[in-house]
Length: 98
Image 1: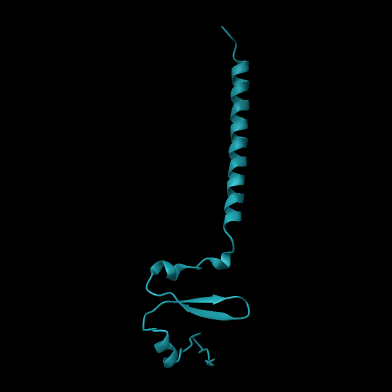
Image 2: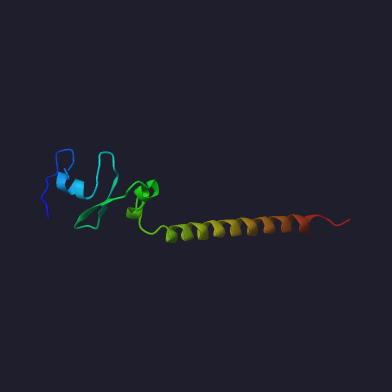
C-alpha cells in the first residue's frame, strides 16, 4: 500500500513504479469507483465504451423510474381516450336523426 496526498486541486500522483506495473501512460483514462468509505481507481484500457461504464451509477437503477414514467403516460392517454369517447358519444347522441 502506498500513501498519497490529495492536492488543493483534488489531484493525486500515482507513483512511477505503480504506473509502470499497470502500464499507465499519459492520457490513459481511469475509472474512479466509490462506495461511501473507499475509492478505487481502475484502468479502462483503450475501449471508449469501457471508459463510460458506470458513468450513471450514482443515479441508481433507472429501470424503475422508466417503468413509472410509462405507467403515468399510459394513465394520461387512457384519460384522454375516455374523455374523447365521452365527448364524441354526447355529440352523436345529441344530433337529431333524419
